[in-house]
Length: 481
Picture 1: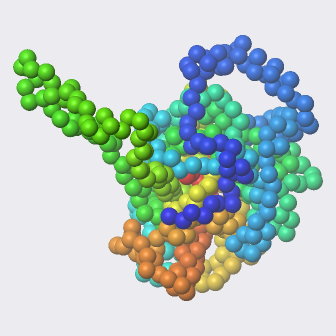
Picture 2: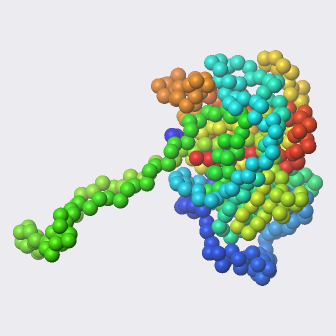
Picture 3: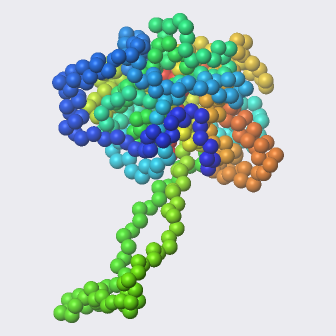
C-alpha cells in the first residue's frame, strides 16, 4: 500500500487525531437538541456568533430556498492549486481539519437497514462488466455505444442510515479542474437559480451533517471529509453489491482480523476440591531479591510497540438517484437520529471500483446532474472519434482528474476476467513499472468514459425518465473498506 497522501486531504493533519471515529451524544442530549426549546436555544446561539460577513448559500436540502449564513465555516477552508493529470492547474478548497485515519471498523451494528423495492428487468444485463475493457486487450477501444450500457431497469432501495451525533456542519471541500480556462473556484457573478451543485445535499443533511455550499463557488466536484459515520461505508458497499455491472481495479476487501481469545492460565490447581492450599498462591523469596534490595532493579528490555499499518480503502463510483422517503417531501427523510432515503441504481451504468490513497475524501459527487448529462452528445462510433462540441471529453477529463488525485496506483489491478484479483504488476521494476502505471491510468480513464457514456445514454430510457428525478441524480463516490 502506498504511503502517499491525496492532495484532497485535510489541511491540518494534527488538529483531529481520530477523524474516523463516529461521534456519539447521550440520548437525553439528542432529545433536548431536537426539541423546540433546544432548537430556539441553538438558533439564538448561532445568531450571537454571526459576527462575520453573511454568505449566500444553497439550502441544506440543495434547493433554491434563500439561506444566509455567517462566515463561520468558510474561514476554515484553505484554497490551493495543484498540477492535474491533464497538465492544467486545478483549484482545491480543502477543509482545515484532521486527516482521514484508516482505523479498522470491525463492527457496524445496526447502522443501516436496506429495503429492496420493485426492480423488474434490472438484472437482465451481465452481472460483471470487466470484459468491456478487460478482455485480454487493454488498448482496445471502449465500446461506449455497447447495448450493455443501455438502461432497461431501475432498482430502488430504501436505506435507513442511523447516527448518534448532534447535527453539525459537514466538512466540505471543493475541486475545480484545470481543464477550464478559468480555474478560479469563485465566480464574480452569482447564479442564484443554479442549484445543481447541491443535488446530493439531502444525503448529508438528512444524516445530521449540514452541507454549507456558497452560491459563489463553481466547483466540478464537491467532496466531504466528515463527520464520519460507519454507515457510510456500509451504504457504499450495499450500492456496490446491488449494482448490475461492476468494473473493479482493486482486490476485494480483506476479512476483518479475528478477535483474540483470552489467554489460558499458566498454572492450574490439580485438586481444587481438596483442603490443601492452592499451589499458585505460594510465593518463596529468592536469594537474588534478598541481597539486592539496596539497588534499583534494572528495567526489562522491550521493543517499542509498532503502530498498526493503515488499512487499505477503496472508492466506488456509481450513478445514483435520490428520492425522499414519502410524498415527495425531503423533510420525511429526516428523522430523529436516522435518515431514510430511496436510492436508485441503473442497470446500464456500471460501478467502478478503484483503490484509494490515504486522505481520500469520505464522500464526493460530480456537480452535473443527470438532466445535464442527458444533453451531452456522444462521439460517433469508431476508434479515436470525438464529440462535436468536446463536452463529453471534458466531463470524462474532469472526473478522471479528480480520481487521479485519489487512486493508489500501486494497488491498481489489471487482469482479465479469469485473472481478476491477481496483481499483475508485482514484479515490475524501473521502466516496466512506469509503463505499467500508464496502462493502469489508461484503463481507469477508459472505465470513467464507459461510466459517463452509460449515464448519458440513460436518458433514452422511458423507465429512467418515469422513475428517476433527473435533478436529484448523478455520479457519486463513496470511500469503502
